[in-house]
Length: 327
Image (cartoon, rainbow, N blue to C red; front, side):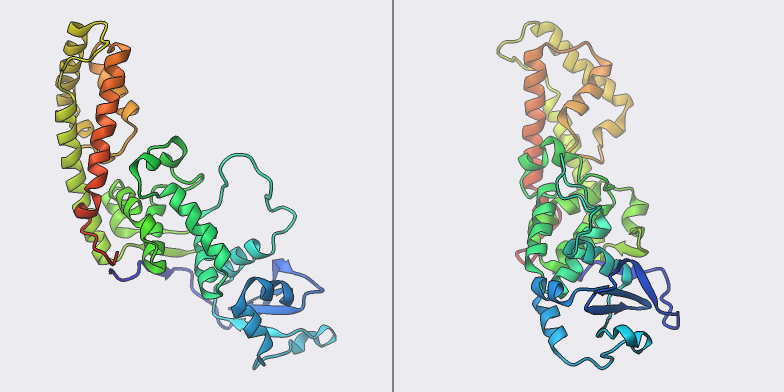
């Protein structure tokens, strides 16, 4: 298995900075103070212990810095954590939802990549298993192993509010957590990224640099070339005139398919496509700019042929990415 994806905090920590109360999670009647770097969160010991066996054990053990002497009149146990304030804030939003948190919603659930990533990191650290199960289910929905699941409309576009480069972070999550079920399609999405993004990674909104490790970077660089070659072969195999039962204009449809292939000579990027699993209908619409429209039967047949070829390409992904049993 490859090493874990690289994550580096770009914002410098300030160990000598003055302690401050978190604006969002400071309850005057809170029973525990969590100190992350220079930020303190006053929350409820019993609630956190109910969610996390690690917290439950932590709160039951004597702490070196047990009381906040600066607030002697409201003495409250203090637990110093090694987590970043941003991660802890995301985590607490999941465990202690406030009134502005969406509970009843319509449509796909919108969760920022940074929130999901923090919940996975701290959910794993503090053994909040149900949170990890929900996070994995969310990622498996948008980064499935199965091509037909990927090809569904909402899945194809990726998680709401996410950008394609977040797939780099998903690869890192898959490696860190051993979640092989999301690795294949996450690597595939990485292959659609510009080379500079693939190499340099991206910076999250909370100042984390996410990059692929060297082995996965090599996988994706090689995969870009292999998938473009596969897509080119698919175009040559599918844009071949043949008889389609139900065709209402056989001669005209055959000429249209021939004209599509000829027209693509001027658009090599359409043929050596960096998005080999693009929507088949979108690819056909681009092709039909160079030809007369196909009859409905021929259009439907050609779209099905493309999807069938994409399904075959998808089946080759484990070989293209050289994924073994441990990946």
